[in-house]
Length: 275
Image (cartoon, rainbow, N blue to C red):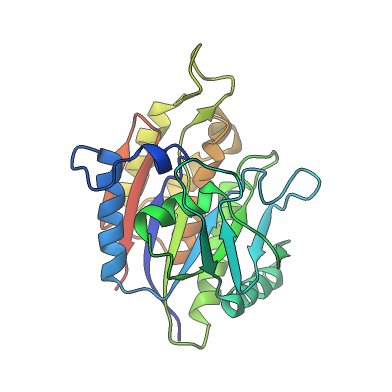
């Protein structure tokens, strides 16, 4: 049977691909990703099930799913020209992806599928830093965290639990890592940034509260406080917290093995080792 061996939460800030100095001990972003990469290698995964958000690069407003699963044998990217991000071809665990899609549909989720798709920075920035060899099969699960109305935090948690049950029932002996990618508070080109800036962190106190909930393993309180209004007040990227919540639902919660919060960017780096 499949085994979920770890959960990961990381950001996917596109500028990191070009600006982060990998291997530089003074670069705290590089160091944070390196700590995650080391722990990922230690659990020897076969598959990464990823919750992230398309930034209108894979889908557009005429066909933008609330929840979608990529069901294919391979994918590639980036499809958004992110500077510094290497082009990669990635294997997709098609059979597991299809099983997850069916199980979520049977659990009353209106889940879409895409059989031909490419990926943007929200998937490939994390992978470039934590698995640069791009040798792990992935299952991409698209969660709408940008285009209102976004799913509720409670719905994201339930989605994760359903995905976790689906993985646990998968008959093959594979080691699965679950990754949720995104920020807690971030506004890019929106109403909450200062003049002459292109981004800002409008809700630093919310970042602190999210960090406290994560550190304590108190995910019920996190979900209870992560209302749509709160996520909107955290910036036009604040809904990406849903990807972390879906990941936590999938792995069943727990206290993180490591958690680094970078308040100045409104995000964090977490690892949950389960075996």
